[in-house]
Image 1 (cartoon, rainbow, N blue to C red):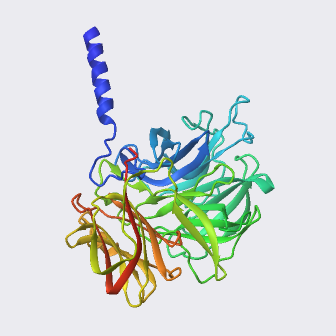
Image 2 (cartoon, rainbow, N blue to C red; image 1 turned 135 degrees about the horizontal axis):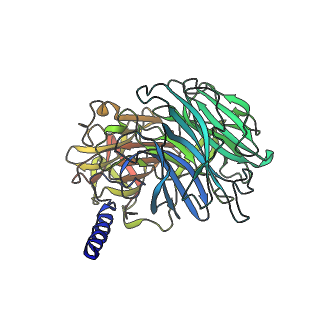
Image 3 (spheres, helix red, strand yellow; image 1 turned 90 degrees about the vertical axis):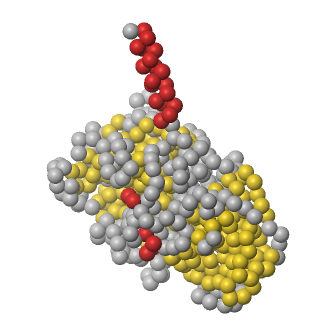
Length: 504
């Protein structure tokens, strides 16, 4: 018996050692969050508490495709190095745990605290209920809550659930925050098919009162999901803030800038224009952190994938990644409010080596950069010349490459991934390869920050005015970099390529 016990311990030890993620698999991002294994989609419950950034997320604990929705969980003290934790809130008894948010109930409005030292973390989520598993389309959606008294390590589902049920089928994705001027909790919930965001208020997270509706507005060509409302500072105007409403539309996102009085949001966007926080194919369901320290800019995290091919991307044993955290601010231009989003400044920095080009390099056709890597940050700037198309290619190998360029004639920033990687995993993937967004040069120049991480490219243009995110799946040997200029000679005034360390 003694020898058997020792053998069991040895097997247990090695099974745990070898079950830890290597994070060396093909296409595995090295400085973006990915689950150790299995499916992941929307970020949920982003909240900062006791020095930890909590990242909950839609997760299938049992497989690498969508299903069995539960809340996965990870924590970090710097938004870069993550510790995986057990599933936080599990699917149970025909109730799947869909998207939602988390708050810190500092004054115990819920009464969940048992002792004076307890500070409840409360998760607010959509319960997706299928009474008969043979009829998956016959479902209902309600808003439920669960609470934790141990900093998010374990949750107890509230015995009084649901806290909000209006008898609608597609009524989901609650975002909750504390509104200090009115001393109330505010909840946004989306009527997905009707393109309406419903606003509610509550004194205790349990009893909710409907206050107003917003929508349809902007882009309502697809279902609405994953709304968020937050205050954002105006650049170079200390103390001035505006309210920003964000939501997702099946394959993309949009934002509105306006006013919120604790009951109703009023958009100041032009009615005929759509504003997006990201113009690429692979940025969705982005929400911001609750309970950040006073004065900290909002932090947005989105899901990098697209429902058109999400289940089929060629990654194993995990599926999907989270975007690099983005800091938000606002700028007013020509009576339009522009949401700026830029990469979170990491501490400690992830830079391993940096290559800097000498200034004022003139390029006609193309020129190689003497760096070969698939985990890099790039800062590049050039003077826009009439009738030229200029930019940079990543994941280069011969004719292969991911193109990021600017067409001076149309004044559009664009990407083209059609010749960048394997596309055989989905018959339609290559059809969704070219994306563009209008962009006016600043002082005659285009400047880009680019994060390239194995299978992810994030582009931030002109101080985050326009962003484009896309997935690619290149061979490991496709790791070259080159700049290009077509239609004339382009002067590149800055090029810095930094290779980045793995956070795993």
